[in-house]
Image (cartoon, rainbow, N blue to C red; front, side, top):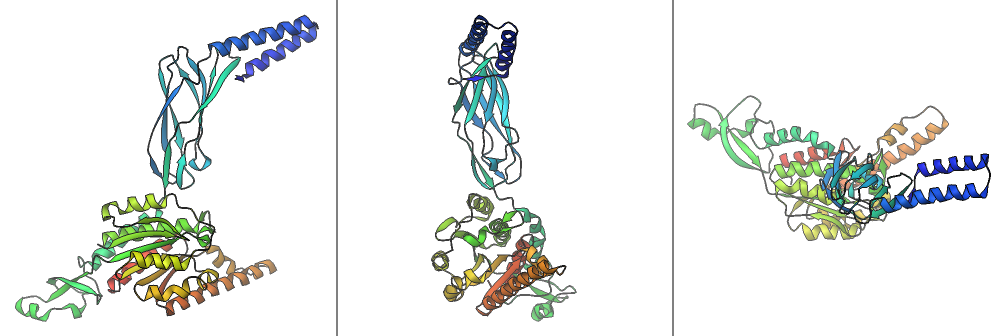
Length: 430
């Protein structure tokens, strides 16, 4: 049961009347009138328990994109259900307005729409639907809650998609569909065509040119069907925030762009998310379904506040990648985590695979390193310079062990990693 503002107003008026003509009879009369009105409302208000609900709407959406979820209310009871409905969602789902007026006649249906603009990835589950039906006098209402299950999976936004057309154009150049200046040593012969200015003279086929009236050059197609295994480290280093988002979000964006590009290049792309155990995995998926599988696997991932097990991660990579592959490890470039964790087990990985380590750097550190305004900024600059020097030291140490490092801020990491993949492919080093 719930009382309305009208009840409070009538009670105040009754108190005013009794104050003018004070008597116990007046008090009892006012109380009796209010009680009778409340009782009538509770008897004649529509039943909340009898209401039935159905949900409809998309089951998945991208982070930040609006979506509408509809809730149909069916009233099988004999009385009209008039009042307010609250369709509760968690804050991460971003409900714009969760309270709706309803007026459902006996035996009728009404539909309310809740607009969501999610602010966090993952599975967002609807909470209870609470309904308050008011009686004809507007003094009291029945109230109850129903569990109406519905889950919306909020997918990673993939903002680096805008970089894909330019990288696909470069990929077409590597495929020999356009003239290029450099041909990699690890490519396969594709066909012959006429020489155009800018072609590498080493690609001229002199025997074919002798039989033709024009100078002919060989075109080459990069080797295909290579395996690319993207490993997301979901341990504590991925929880560090750069700007408004954790490092893991930038790592996901880079993995999506690389996956889209490599699958278009004819390579097989697998995904592994690991800290102390496998958090998500995608393998054996065709190019047409790869992005969908990756975003669905990444959506519920959250950073785990534990130190990642580098030995277990490398063992899992070796178990999944039987033949020589490009292993892209997206993790932090912190010496405190890498030196006791990854570096001791790195030789077993680099001995069998080409390894690229991608790391998200914080642009604020670079900004702090330039500060010289006062004593506080000088101390901050010294700390930032030390952090940058430590990252440079780790990059050099990894390079000496055969690991290529891509270290960039969140906005630049996806295209930088895609460019490194294209460079490796052009050089035949996959």
